Length: 299
Image (tube, rainbow, N blue to C red; front, side):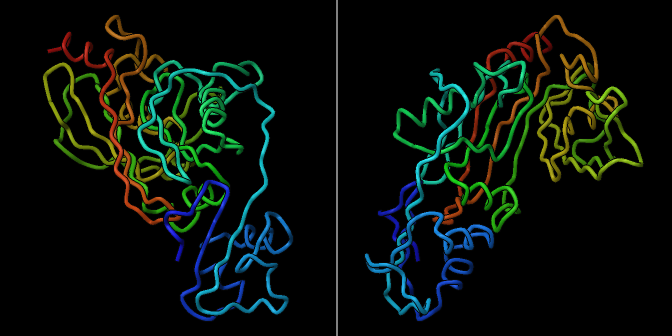
């Protein structure tokens, strides 16, 4: 098992609970990916057993302590500093509350003032010498919870590995018109539109599933809690528009609003398991001021 109080973002310390070979320890017990374990055995990161070089026969005994230290990583992007609210942190994860109107990842036309630049600033202040790896992303105008992996191990585990199916992301949206049903599931395939910017409902698209529950239903609007089963681009926005309840302020799939300057969509709750300590984590983010102000105007 991992020795709980000795873990760091770039150090993995594990004590064997029975006799085993190194491959079993890395893959089955420490939960590294196949690619990651091969890299470790090929010298990516320094691996020792009981403070000495690994045994040549690869055999480990009960009580042996494996220690893996990964090298520092650098980034090609500019490091910047901004007060970003941290919702949760451990040796593998940093979960933050992204404000609206902030781009998550740099692009050719937007290299600075992104969440990645600011996360690098947080990393530097905490002496974390690692690349920023986003487990989840949000549109520029969508606010709320975003998960950052501090290392390749946790990024793989959460994005496509052994705990990826344990993630639940909940959103809160304020939509136009009342919802027909108090709860339900929208199953409509989504494809790229010809303009390569918008997404459309199409039988030739990818499967997309959105579960919803109405928190408040009025004649001219509704507040809806949504759970994504799949993660298609613009999925919530496309699905709600398709059933006649576009998100207020969503100019791409609805229309502009005088009451809010963006789509009223917020990632409000996250449930997941931290991959190394297998701790169940629940993180919540309150609705921002502009969405609360919108609701007050509509009521």
